[in-house]
Length: 452
Ligand code: PEP
Ligand code: CO
Image (cartoon, rainbow, N blue to C red; front, side, top):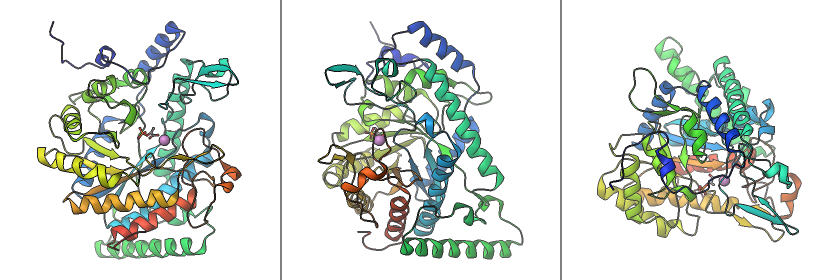
């Protein structure tokens, strides 16, 4: 029997699914998905296409992609302070990166829908009791009780709503002038106590503001295009039934759009060529990311790029590599060479977080600022040395004063992690560490030999 190659929003159901979720109440799941399908989209196809265009520019070296936000957003963080704090740090980093890269920065937040997680095991055992693992607030709750850990379809609707509330607030802030380049004072440096960091940041902001005034004087009017910075949204498209429920055709465009966010990505654990995730993603029109790691083979990458971007459309595919500081020099060059050989178009982006995770002696998951920086530093050099281009970065960060990653200007130690370790999953850079990293990257991109 010939297996049909035809794509439909549910054709992924015929493929092997990794990281699937076992809902005990199937009728309730079906009802929740039907309801989700009837609700309006969270983003529009115009925005999605605009982002694709910007990512095509980033792949050509005319813009730079900044992706950042929580490893896993919690519903409890759908409050004004954490949302504003996240926007602020992304705006601060954008200013610094724009200055260093001399390119427009495209912001894609890991927010307004980053609610599901892949896990190394489906279950967790504590004191002889085995329960389903916590899979993110869209699926279940972190408390270790049978009630909290049972996948609950109602959470799909709660997640959609929280994503909508978050987006509504972000759009309101941006439209109201919060992200206006003329008013960088709106994004004051909340938690930055380090005088050198804030002095360097203020200098850059002053230079940009001066440049903007100069351009506007020349033009004789305010430059609309430069007025403010926009935000796009992205999350790991792990929960395919959720993604499918918001995937639709739109008037006057061909193709299907996944309108849960602008740029979903395939996680490293679910990027198998014959798997359900690749099947779903190949058929949607959004710009998409795929996380590639130390085990990705060159032939496999070429095939992935062919499946996910058969028309070689600029801006469609972002390859987010996450090897770890120790592996990148070995793993990256053959992948760059393979993509160059086939002439495939992709935007290369470095995630220096997920290959550098380790556990402390007391069992905390952490990442070392120095290793994060070392992977980034090498990523720029390796791409340049191989005639390629690193066009973006992907971070797990928060605008708050957490203590989850060690190192940075404040020299956070392992013992210091206990002070404010709030993540339920991966450790995030805090406000100061994020700004420091952006400043070091800016130096690197401005042509300094090494950021380290
Ligand atoms: C993540 O982005 O949180 C994640 C799980 O990453 P990866 O798929 O690269 O391991
Ligand atoms: Co993570």
